[in-house]
Length: 209
Image (tube, rainbow, N blue to C red; front, side, top):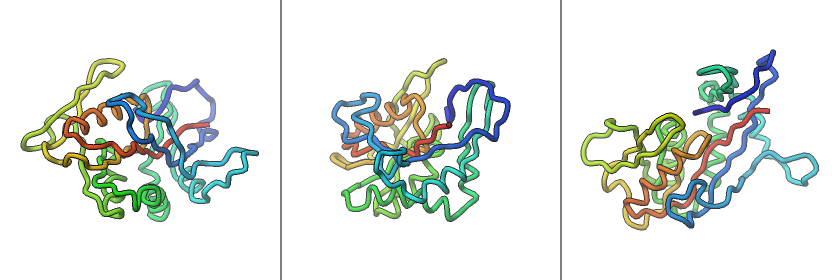
């Protein structure tokens, strides 16, 4: 899900996206949902906390369209396709990820289908890492390994090519946002099957206010 449940409001224009580049730290427990403490990098400053907000965050927030009651009533959908129409803002979002991970010895960036494919390759190229697509079932040719995970209504699955990561590779998992954490947890377990080391799980954290 790319949104959250909301109470019905009379005016959609009152909804705004609040943005910060966030990530989960080094994985201490295999496959644990959340996998460590949540940290924020260059996140929006709160009033009175003494931190300066990165000026790029406001532009990113303004570029994300918040669509009430999509794809069904009660869901507040955060549409990042509007951000992609503004190259300068799109670059700012990618740059904030790159600044976080450049020089950290990252061997691979793994992107979760589908919006992890938007940010992941750009980040991988900028930091000199390979990109690994984590895909839905039946989308990858050749030998794959898979991880099934539970949704609110049923199950889903992620797949990855065998040998995409080498033992000990430091991997960053990238998606546009995290809702329940189920998909992210599955991605971690999938990568750990190939004995990679999950450096961090990072996303463009989007909420509404």
